[in-house]
Length: 342
Image 1 (cartoon, rainbow, N blue to C red):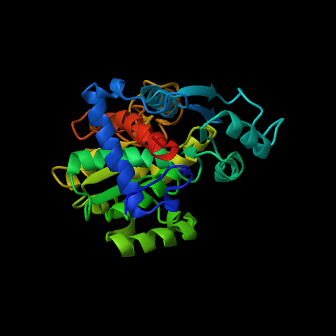
Image 2 (cartoon, rainbow, N blue to C red; image 1 turned 135 degrees about the horizontal axis):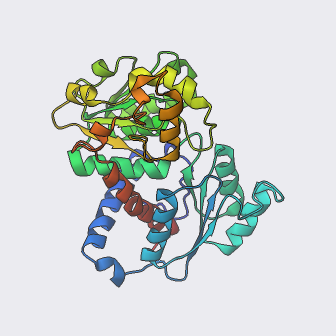
Image 3 (cartoon, rainbow, N blue to C red; image 1 turned 90 degrees about the vertical axis):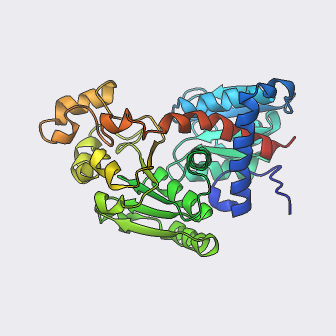
């Protein structure tokens, strides 16, 4: 049966089927080829459509990808930043959703609570796209598995290791993506993190593994976890919106889980490194410089400003983070096009 996503919201990837997720990945690859060939200027199917991108959390890739994707498709875009609307402050989320749904053909939301996305879906009556919440990052994961498919080919039975703070939204998202693709995923970090995972999400992923193949494992040894890995993936240890003070406790917990060359060499020779960005791999950001100055003596692994990944790994040919970043554009274009419709 052909896949038809017109009118659907991408609130959580778990609300989609395996065929629908694979369709979005393949459409993303096709749209990338079209862009590279310069053919996207000949066909702008969403002329006359308009979307709004609503941000409680600032962003580089998500905002730029939505704006360029909409422009390529012919749609207009309105950006509302953290101080640009009364969303949830002077106006209820429900009322805002009803208003925006009358103005726009689609709504992107990037913020904190998954319940805010759910409310937008319930009350706006137009497609809503989750640009990141504390629970999940579905637009990112379509780009990530698109990137894996480009680099590795057929993903079934390939192995991906997410190392570090796997109880965050990206740890969940990598696990969910692996379950759809029939991959083996290892979540590698402190033992206690396993008990902090949402058991409902784990159960849904286990059901997908039964359908699609693959498996889920947990590990607290990064070199053991890396054996036979096709992909090693990490993310920041303190997320945007969390206080700087958390770096001390997080580095204390996660210092044995920094991605370094020893970990990369423990994996397959053809392994790739992935990171959804921004990455703390040197002292060229205000945060990483401050971490190096304040915590470098206490925790030598961060004295250079590298936190979740060393600069040696980040600057190596293993690193595919910038391919991921580019693919945000093509995957978001696919999501907009598939859900608003031709």
